[in-house]
Length: 259
Ligand SMILES: NC(=O)c1ccc[n+]([C@@H]2O[C@H](COP(=O)([O-])OP(=O)(O)OC[C@H]3O[C@@H](n4cnc5c(N)ncnc54)[C@H](O)[C@@H]3O)[C@@H](O)[C@H]2O)c1
Image 1 (cartoon, rainbow, N blue to C red):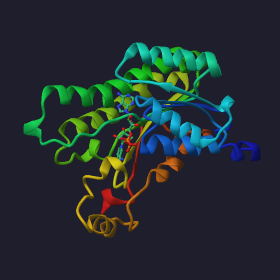
Image 2 (tube, rainbow, N blue to C red):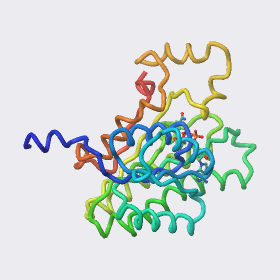
Image 3 (tube, rainbow, N blue to C red):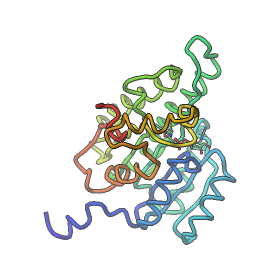
Image 4 (cartoon, protein in one colour):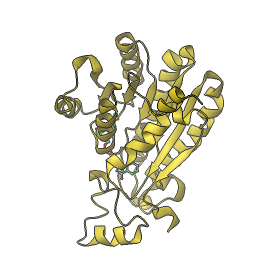
Protein backbone atom coordinates (compact mmCIF):
# COMPACT_ATOMS: atom_id res chain seq x y z
CA UNK A 1 0.00 0.00 0.00
CA UNK A 2 1.23 3.49 -0.83
CA UNK A 3 2.32 5.92 1.89
CA UNK A 4 -0.74 8.03 1.05
CA UNK A 5 -3.03 4.98 1.38
CA UNK A 6 -1.52 4.12 4.76
CA UNK A 7 -1.85 7.66 6.01
CA UNK A 8 -5.54 7.68 5.05
CA UNK A 9 -6.45 4.41 6.78
CA UNK A 10 -8.19 6.20 9.64
CA UNK A 11 -9.22 9.33 7.77
CA UNK A 12 -12.86 10.33 8.27
CA UNK A 13 -12.42 14.03 7.54
CA UNK A 14 -15.33 15.31 5.42
CA UNK A 15 -17.11 11.99 5.80
CA UNK A 16 -20.80 12.39 6.62
CA UNK A 17 -21.94 10.43 9.68
CA UNK A 18 -25.51 10.07 10.89
CA UNK A 19 -25.73 9.31 14.61
CA UNK A 20 -28.90 8.13 16.36
CA UNK A 21 -29.31 8.50 20.11
CA UNK A 22 -26.72 11.28 19.88
CA UNK A 23 -27.75 12.96 23.11
CA UNK A 24 -26.84 9.92 25.21
CA UNK A 25 -23.52 9.01 26.82
CA UNK A 26 -22.13 6.98 23.91
CA UNK A 27 -23.69 8.91 21.01
CA UNK A 28 -22.39 12.25 22.30
CA UNK A 29 -18.88 10.85 22.88
CA UNK A 30 -18.73 9.50 19.32
CA UNK A 31 -20.12 12.76 17.92
CA UNK A 32 -17.50 14.85 19.73
CA UNK A 33 -14.71 12.52 18.62
CA UNK A 34 -15.80 12.50 14.97
CA UNK A 35 -16.32 16.28 14.94
CA UNK A 36 -12.71 16.73 16.10
CA UNK A 37 -11.62 14.44 13.23
CA UNK A 38 -13.35 16.75 10.73
CA UNK A 39 -16.40 14.58 9.96
CA UNK A 40 -19.75 16.17 9.12
CA UNK A 41 -22.49 15.25 11.56
CA UNK A 42 -26.18 14.56 11.29
CA UNK A 43 -26.75 14.60 14.99
CA UNK A 44 -30.11 13.10 15.95
CA UNK A 45 -31.99 12.09 19.06
CA UNK A 46 -35.49 11.55 20.38
CA UNK A 47 -34.58 14.24 22.96
CA UNK A 48 -34.07 17.27 20.70
CA UNK A 49 -33.38 19.92 23.40
CA UNK A 50 -30.57 17.79 24.85
CA UNK A 51 -29.16 17.11 21.37
CA UNK A 52 -29.20 20.86 20.65
CA UNK A 53 -27.54 21.59 23.97
CA UNK A 54 -24.72 19.08 23.30
CA UNK A 55 -24.30 20.32 19.71
CA UNK A 56 -24.07 23.91 20.96
CA UNK A 57 -21.32 22.96 23.44
CA UNK A 58 -19.34 21.18 20.69
CA UNK A 59 -18.72 24.61 19.13
CA UNK A 60 -18.21 23.24 15.63
CA UNK A 61 -18.97 25.29 12.50
CA UNK A 62 -22.63 25.30 11.44
CA UNK A 63 -21.52 23.97 8.06
CA UNK A 64 -20.31 20.79 9.79
CA UNK A 65 -23.49 19.75 11.62
CA UNK A 66 -27.26 19.50 11.44
CA UNK A 67 -29.27 18.57 14.51
CA UNK A 68 -32.54 16.72 14.00
CA UNK A 69 -35.31 15.31 16.15
CA UNK A 70 -35.52 11.61 15.31
CA UNK A 71 -37.60 8.92 16.96
CA UNK A 72 -36.29 5.70 15.41
CA UNK A 73 -39.68 4.03 15.97
CA UNK A 74 -41.29 6.36 13.44
CA UNK A 75 -40.61 5.23 9.86
CA UNK A 76 -41.87 8.46 8.30
CA UNK A 77 -39.48 10.47 10.45
CA UNK A 78 -36.65 8.08 9.59
CA UNK A 79 -37.35 8.53 5.87
CA UNK A 80 -37.59 12.31 6.19
CA UNK A 81 -34.43 12.78 8.26
CA UNK A 82 -32.43 10.62 5.83
CA UNK A 83 -33.87 12.61 2.89
CA UNK A 84 -33.07 15.95 4.56
CA UNK A 85 -29.54 14.79 5.42
CA UNK A 86 -28.88 13.88 1.79
CA UNK A 87 -30.22 17.17 0.49
CA UNK A 88 -27.99 18.99 3.02
CA UNK A 89 -24.74 17.01 2.76
CA UNK A 90 -25.32 15.15 -0.54
CA UNK A 91 -24.83 11.71 0.97
CA UNK A 92 -24.40 9.69 4.18
CA UNK A 93 -21.09 7.80 4.39
CA UNK A 94 -21.41 6.35 7.89
CA UNK A 95 -24.41 5.34 10.00
CA UNK A 96 -23.78 5.01 13.74
CA UNK A 97 -26.95 3.16 14.65
CA UNK A 98 -26.94 3.66 18.37
CA UNK A 99 -30.26 4.72 19.95
CA UNK A 100 -31.37 2.22 22.57
CA UNK A 101 -33.09 1.71 25.90
CA UNK A 102 -32.41 -0.77 28.67
CA UNK A 103 -35.17 -1.26 31.23
CA UNK A 104 -34.08 -3.95 33.68
CA UNK A 105 -37.10 -6.06 34.56
CA UNK A 106 -37.34 -9.66 35.71
CA UNK A 107 -38.62 -11.93 32.91
CA UNK A 108 -41.76 -12.85 34.87
CA UNK A 109 -42.70 -9.17 35.25
CA UNK A 110 -42.24 -7.90 31.69
CA UNK A 111 -45.45 -6.50 30.22
CA UNK A 112 -46.12 -6.80 26.48
CA UNK A 113 -45.91 -3.01 26.01
CA UNK A 114 -42.39 -2.88 27.51
CA UNK A 115 -41.25 -5.89 25.48
CA UNK A 116 -42.53 -4.25 22.29
CA UNK A 117 -41.01 -0.88 23.19
CA UNK A 118 -37.54 -2.40 23.62
CA UNK A 119 -37.75 -4.41 20.41
CA UNK A 120 -39.20 -1.43 18.50
CA UNK A 121 -36.37 0.91 19.48
CA UNK A 122 -33.38 -1.40 19.82
CA UNK A 123 -34.00 -3.84 16.96
CA UNK A 124 -36.70 -2.60 14.55
CA UNK A 125 -35.44 1.00 14.89
CA UNK A 126 -31.90 0.00 13.96
CA UNK A 127 -33.12 -2.14 11.06
CA UNK A 128 -35.32 0.53 9.47
CA UNK A 129 -32.61 3.18 9.93
CA UNK A 130 -30.10 0.95 8.14
CA UNK A 131 -32.64 0.07 5.43
CA UNK A 132 -33.46 3.71 4.72
CA UNK A 133 -29.85 4.92 4.67
CA UNK A 134 -28.89 1.99 2.42
CA UNK A 135 -31.79 2.58 0.01
CA UNK A 136 -31.55 6.35 -0.25
CA UNK A 137 -27.79 6.86 -0.37
CA UNK A 138 -25.38 3.98 0.31
CA UNK A 139 -26.63 1.54 -2.36
CA UNK A 140 -26.86 4.21 -5.11
CA UNK A 141 -23.37 5.47 -4.12
CA UNK A 142 -21.92 1.94 -3.83
CA UNK A 143 -20.28 3.00 -0.59
CA UNK A 144 -21.07 2.99 3.11
CA UNK A 145 -20.18 1.92 6.61
CA UNK A 146 -22.86 0.90 9.09
CA UNK A 147 -22.00 0.40 12.75
CA UNK A 148 -24.76 -1.03 14.96
CA UNK A 149 -24.53 -0.77 18.73
CA UNK A 150 -25.17 -4.17 20.22
CA UNK A 151 -24.00 -5.21 23.70
CA UNK A 152 -22.16 -8.07 25.35
CA UNK A 153 -25.59 -8.94 26.78
CA UNK A 154 -26.63 -9.80 23.23
CA UNK A 155 -24.12 -12.68 23.36
CA UNK A 156 -24.26 -13.91 26.92
CA UNK A 157 -27.50 -12.55 28.39
CA UNK A 158 -27.94 -11.22 31.90
CA UNK A 159 -30.53 -11.25 34.66
CA UNK A 160 -33.31 -8.71 34.09
CA UNK A 161 -32.43 -8.36 30.42
CA UNK A 162 -34.86 -10.66 28.59
CA UNK A 163 -36.04 -7.97 26.14
CA UNK A 164 -32.79 -6.00 26.02
CA UNK A 165 -30.49 -8.98 25.50
CA UNK A 166 -32.88 -10.43 22.89
CA UNK A 167 -32.86 -7.15 20.97
CA UNK A 168 -29.05 -6.92 21.14
CA UNK A 169 -28.63 -10.57 20.10
CA UNK A 170 -30.93 -9.77 17.19
CA UNK A 171 -28.62 -6.91 16.22
CA UNK A 172 -25.64 -9.26 16.01
CA UNK A 173 -27.56 -11.56 13.64
CA UNK A 174 -29.05 -8.65 11.68
CA UNK A 175 -25.52 -7.30 11.20
CA UNK A 176 -24.50 -10.61 9.57
CA UNK A 177 -27.57 -10.66 7.30
CA UNK A 178 -27.09 -7.07 6.10
CA UNK A 179 -23.37 -7.68 5.58
CA UNK A 180 -24.30 -10.62 3.33
CA UNK A 181 -26.90 -8.70 1.34
CA UNK A 182 -25.08 -5.39 0.99
CA UNK A 183 -21.46 -6.45 0.56
CA UNK A 184 -21.95 -6.32 -3.22
CA UNK A 185 -22.77 -2.63 -2.85
CA UNK A 186 -19.49 -2.01 -1.01
CA UNK A 187 -21.33 -1.44 2.26
CA UNK A 188 -19.65 -2.74 5.39
CA UNK A 189 -22.02 -3.64 8.23
CA UNK A 190 -20.52 -4.34 11.64
CA UNK A 191 -21.50 -3.96 15.25
CA UNK A 192 -19.90 -3.15 18.55
CA UNK A 193 -20.69 -4.96 21.77
CA UNK A 194 -19.73 -2.72 24.68
CA UNK A 195 -19.91 -3.83 28.30
CA UNK A 196 -18.49 -2.96 31.68
CA UNK A 197 -18.98 0.78 31.09
CA UNK A 198 -19.58 3.41 33.73
CA UNK A 199 -22.49 5.39 32.24
CA UNK A 200 -25.96 6.57 33.35
CA UNK A 201 -27.42 3.44 31.67
CA UNK A 202 -25.44 1.20 34.03
CA UNK A 203 -25.87 3.38 37.16
CA UNK A 204 -28.27 0.87 38.73
CA UNK A 205 -25.75 -1.96 38.31
CA UNK A 206 -23.12 -0.02 40.25
CA UNK A 207 -25.41 1.63 42.80
CA UNK A 208 -23.99 -0.31 45.78
CA UNK A 209 -21.01 1.27 47.52
CA UNK A 210 -17.73 -0.31 46.41
CA UNK A 211 -19.31 -2.14 43.45
CA UNK A 212 -17.34 -0.16 40.86
CA UNK A 213 -14.05 -0.95 42.59
CA UNK A 214 -15.02 -4.63 42.79
CA UNK A 215 -15.95 -4.75 39.10
CA UNK A 216 -12.72 -2.95 38.18
CA UNK A 217 -10.60 -5.52 40.02
CA UNK A 218 -12.35 -8.34 38.14
CA UNK A 219 -11.59 -6.66 34.80
CA UNK A 220 -8.29 -7.61 33.11
CA UNK A 221 -7.62 -3.95 32.30
CA UNK A 222 -8.43 -3.11 35.95
CA UNK A 223 -11.03 -0.42 35.35
CA UNK A 224 -14.54 0.17 34.08
CA UNK A 225 -14.82 1.66 30.61
CA UNK A 226 -16.05 5.10 29.63
CA UNK A 227 -17.86 6.14 26.43
CA UNK A 228 -14.63 7.58 24.98
CA UNK A 229 -13.18 4.04 25.06
CA UNK A 230 -15.48 3.25 22.11
CA UNK A 231 -14.26 6.02 19.78
CA UNK A 232 -11.27 4.07 18.44
CA UNK A 233 -13.30 1.00 17.48
CA UNK A 234 -16.08 3.06 15.90
CA UNK A 235 -13.42 5.03 14.00
CA UNK A 236 -11.83 1.79 12.79
CA UNK A 237 -15.20 0.45 11.57
CA UNK A 238 -16.00 3.80 9.91
CA UNK A 239 -12.75 4.25 8.03
CA UNK A 240 -10.79 2.59 5.18
CA UNK A 241 -8.83 0.60 7.82
CA UNK A 242 -11.78 -1.82 8.02
CA UNK A 243 -12.55 -2.02 4.28
CA UNK A 244 -12.28 -5.85 4.31
CA UNK A 245 -14.19 -6.36 7.59
CA UNK A 246 -17.94 -6.98 7.52
CA UNK A 247 -20.59 -8.86 9.47
CA UNK A 248 -18.49 -8.76 12.63
CA UNK A 249 -19.17 -7.76 16.22
CA UNK A 250 -16.32 -6.33 18.27
CA UNK A 251 -16.52 -6.65 22.05
CA UNK A 252 -15.28 -3.61 23.97
CA UNK A 253 -15.20 -4.51 27.67
CA UNK A 254 -11.68 -4.21 29.07
CA UNK A 255 -11.40 -8.00 28.77
CA UNK A 256 -14.31 -8.80 31.11
CA UNK A 257 -15.73 -11.43 28.76
CA UNK A 258 -12.52 -13.46 28.83
CA UNK A 259 -11.87 -13.25 32.57
N1 LIG B 1 -24.01 2.30 28.53
C1 LIG B 1 -23.63 1.06 28.45
O1 LIG B 1 -23.01 0.52 29.35
C2 LIG B 1 -23.94 0.26 27.21
C3 LIG B 1 -23.40 -1.04 27.11
C4 LIG B 1 -23.69 -1.79 25.97
C5 LIG B 1 -24.48 -1.25 24.97
N2 LIG B 1 -25.00 0.01 25.11
C6 LIG B 1 -25.83 0.51 24.03
O2 LIG B 1 -25.28 1.73 23.56
C7 LIG B 1 -26.31 2.56 23.05
C8 LIG B 1 -26.22 3.93 23.69
O3 LIG B 1 -26.28 3.77 25.09
P1 LIG B 1 -25.97 4.95 26.11
O4 LIG B 1 -25.23 4.38 27.25
O5 LIG B 1 -25.42 6.12 25.39
O6 LIG B 1 -27.44 5.23 26.60
P2 LIG B 1 -28.16 6.62 26.90
O7 LIG B 1 -29.42 6.29 27.60
O8 LIG B 1 -27.20 7.56 27.54
O9 LIG B 1 -28.47 7.15 25.44
C9 LIG B 1 -29.45 6.60 24.62
C10 LIG B 1 -30.02 7.72 23.76
O10 LIG B 1 -31.01 7.15 22.92
C11 LIG B 1 -32.09 8.07 22.85
N3 LIG B 1 -33.33 7.38 22.51
C12 LIG B 1 -34.14 6.63 23.30
N4 LIG B 1 -35.22 6.24 22.62
C13 LIG B 1 -35.09 6.73 21.36
C14 LIG B 1 -35.88 6.66 20.20
N5 LIG B 1 -37.06 6.01 20.18
N6 LIG B 1 -35.44 7.26 19.07
C15 LIG B 1 -34.26 7.92 19.07
N7 LIG B 1 -33.48 8.06 20.15
C16 LIG B 1 -33.90 7.46 21.30
C17 LIG B 1 -32.17 8.70 24.22
O11 LIG B 1 -32.85 9.96 24.18
C18 LIG B 1 -30.70 8.81 24.60
O12 LIG B 1 -30.17 10.08 24.25
C19 LIG B 1 -27.62 1.83 23.33
O13 LIG B 1 -28.03 1.14 22.18
C20 LIG B 1 -27.23 0.87 24.42
O14 LIG B 1 -28.07 -0.25 24.48
C21 LIG B 1 -24.73 0.76 26.20
